[in-house]
Amino acid sequence: MDFKKYIRDIPNFPEEGINFKDITPLLQDADALKKAGEVLFEFTNSIKVDKVVGMESRGFFFAPILATRLNAGFVPVRKQGKLPYRKISESYELEYGTDILEIHADSILKGEKVLIHDDVLATGGTAQAVCKLIEKLGGEVVQCNFLMELEFLKGREKLLDYQVVSLLQY
Image 1: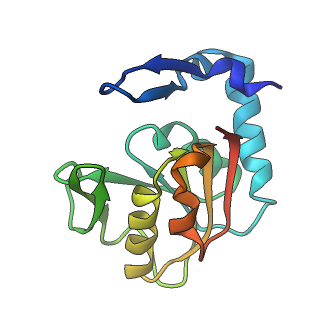
Image 2: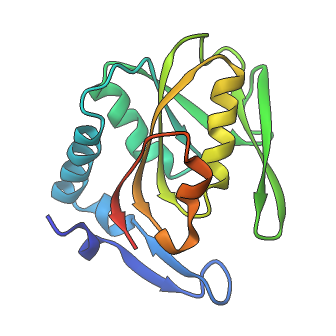
């Protein structure tokens, strides 16, 4: 299936000079959504996973699907102040400043194998921060799994210690 035909370019969003890759058309098409989930699952090679971590917010679309297929739990990682229970945090670099991600402190147990999923690998800062959160809790990152990768931003370079796969590359 040609998944790229389901990705819409939005020029100058969220700011001037950015060409946003909108995955909404893929999510709206039942066949494309199902097939994308199947291919993302195939990337795991049925590895043993205890938890699938999805990043706010678009990582929440496929991460629970992957968790169900892998017979694993789903763990959300959210921006600061969005999780209600005891949590740990990790800051990461943005183009202009920093931001903070949080995970519940009891969501990953020591020794658990964790798959990370997000919609896009761009600069790698978000994924790198999530890897650090998982490792702080004693988990082992077994794969970083993305719907698409913006190769020109070189985000993979921040994830050299991890297996990284992506369905689409730009």
